[in-house]
Image (cartoon, rainbow over all chains, first blue to last red; front, side):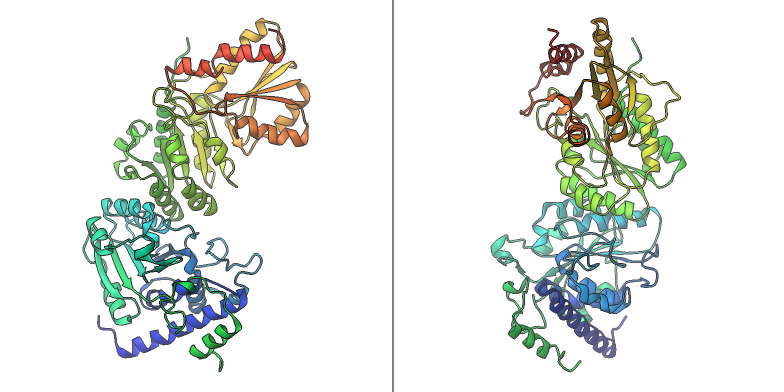
Length: 278
Length: 312
């Protein structure tokens, strides 16, 4: 299916709004995991606005596609998209990180509609998503399960256990998406612990592996709209991204993994994202 | 001699019976379906027995995902591997998520007497019972194991069940009803009351017979649910006996004895002695000899009681 320019324009507008929602939350909470939340925005926008079969009015609809944010610290991106889709009132965004907020520093499915799994500790989401995919196979349902991980996260051994099980059980309804921004909390992923070569690793585990520009809707949707790549095989999409994408001073800078903005930085962010006129 | 039954086989057979009535029930193995008691399940329901190989961490995550999609996974494996190796997955994926998953630690305590510390499990109750909303059960005989499986299947939420591999006699009769969170007074005694769980109960009962012969007024309480504790029963017992001796094939750090002490130290402080494996790296050898080394044999229980009561 050809993706039109108009569709891409629309998705770019939504992505900008999602970034603005994140800044709004960071203003309320006075800090947040900016870098990874911004690097995965196009992926999450594409999923929620062009791919996932889901219903904000019925978040537990049993045939829904599932999205698991395994890299739970990127929850600002998840909260942002769920608000934009109408899972909850946007005013809730202003409670981010306040006492007993339904929007804590890592997502909690008991607190917010649309959150599928309680993540935060890295390396858990692929197995949880795998279990959901396996249940779908057992029940002969058509839903798919999408799991977003970071490229630092996949150093966790539990990821590879889950990858083996998914492959063995032929879960072609399970899609791992790696937000490969090449940075993690303490620097370059290749310096902290080199997890490359991602493509060769996932392929050798029996996954169909594809690489896309994680900020290019044409490329992202070109893959997401044509799944599974191969029957009986899970798919791994390696999305090359830029950490902090969308804010000039934060792009490709690991120091903005978690951002506690100064007044000056916040002013600059508001200007760059066109928020002063809103 | 009463008939002896392997706890794993009883449990696995009961899960199969439950699965025949409830299509949501699945059996999960990590390369140990046979020794986890799931061989009949696997044969009867090959498509509902899921084999995950040696991946205990991811297996817990898969169980959580299955449960969040409406399934009821019963996952059985060697105790340290299903409680300790994947502890964070149990904590985050089952407890935090409140996933309806039943994990069964088998060959618990010193059952792998020859295989050493890696396979013995003396800290599982301590770590699992510290998790909020977790239910922890150590059923004591074949009848209670089957009854407990039925109740656990009805209960919605994560449960940890601890069973051994040492064959057990029945002391309950077939009309016994197991209630989650309830202990059982097997006999009353003012001098001392033995409170125990799992495969230690029959030993305590045998020891009590010897002690009665020696003129000791000994009570015996079975406490199959370690969490939530039967606080009402404990309070009652604490008022009717001079000393409590807790007995467990578990470390004295954090187990049944600790749980009871935590409660009674606040509600009715009294003398509580904990008999279990001391705070050491456990040894190896023939099962009964190893149990004897830590005074967990019938003889060991009798002599411990006599020492406490200064009758020796």
